[in-house]
Length: 364
Image (cartoon, rainbow, N blue to C red):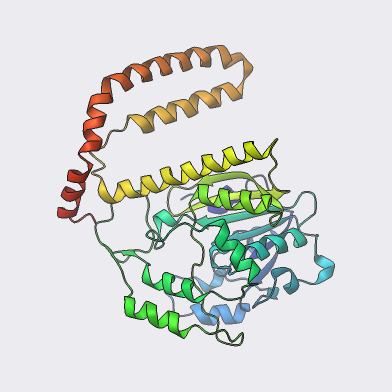
């Protein structure tokens, strides 16, 4: 089985001073494994054990002592001020999508972590491969609005959307890159409207949790870049890695991304916007395409390009050989592209027919 914590926390020393937010029953840096960790959660250890006591899928023995309970207000205010700036790493696994005001979260992280070398390590659901699959990706403008409103609880629109557009595949709420033969809406439109109507402006009203934000890897990268450009996020992405199933991992470091000019920054934004479409296309293909009949050349060629790029970076001695292979690959790709152009055009023109066939076969 894959070691998720090791993948997320690579490059981070076990003796680092760690702050983990919302670990509940699945800590990424547990004390039992030797981590120097301070735990922040929405409830105490005793309350969390009681909450999950009867859940057969939860091992309550994994729930560790909670040092600080955070039930509202900015995150950094839940931590004593003398500890601000003292942490090396802030870990949040499947947390940011729940936070009503992500901009405030990024700001609190900047206050809590070491001003020079602090690392923000996030495990984030990839909306394409879980119950958020039919929801739209979240925009920077929506985050800006949430921050302007100093949002401490989810909006009425968020409450409606979270209920109206949640989707399951049979009994599953998450999956990998695979056909979804039993996709359905587990909630009713009537219930979604009831959630909307039940929303209250009263700050003392009960807090209702949900996924407020929905990301693909590229959409998250775009949000971070744009918030940084607006001087509202003091972080940039050091690395971001899509995972095989429901999530992607990322580490952020201090300082917003910088570009030689606004034009080059906009070029990067455009590239990410295009990448979002390609990511959503991958999700859509699993819904409407017969994967066994789909051409695989593009994915295979992409992997070859990645392999050759790695060779180029690995050693200057291999650059000449890699360059020859690159030219061979591009020449072959050009010939194949020309040869496949008629069949590719026919394949795309047949898309409406293929969608009808997919519907008849019960794929959507």
